[in-house]
Length: 182
Image 1 (tube, rainbow, N blue to C red):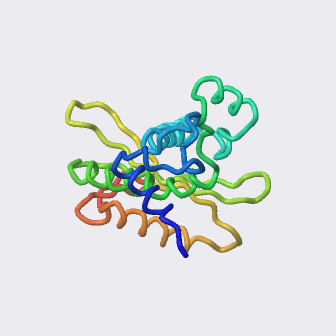
Image 2 (image 1 turned 30 degrees about the vertical axis):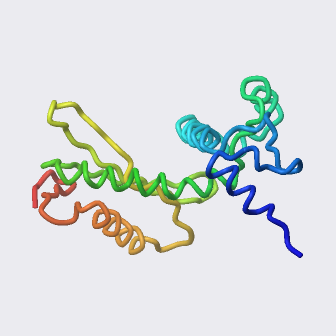
């Protein structure tokens, strides 16, 4: 014969009927409420991104000690939780940047490449523009490492892909290395 534990837990969690909890289901008072935990995790992930910290920083012993004192029952997001949220945050920022660039009349694109001492080749594509208040702005559109040799065609293809991704491939003038507009 089955139990009614699942329906009792649902009624208590979803509808506030906490008197229906069985003794084994009573939530630990030290735990953080799910809605509050979600907000704290989002803030922690933003802090990791803004400060360029490693994904597992909130699970290290010093941070765990601090969190136990500051917010009893909150342990911070795991590295896996941070990874899952990064793609969504990245896509949101990319969409926001696309919309911003669509409203800019003139955009200057730079592509800088270099080789490290270990023969790793890098390419950074940036966009520079003026806002409606004539403030200079610059942002990284792409940063990528290239492996192997003979990668001129791959670099060209990558630049085209990035420009297309941000809607910058058509209707914009280009300037060659001699300073002539095309």
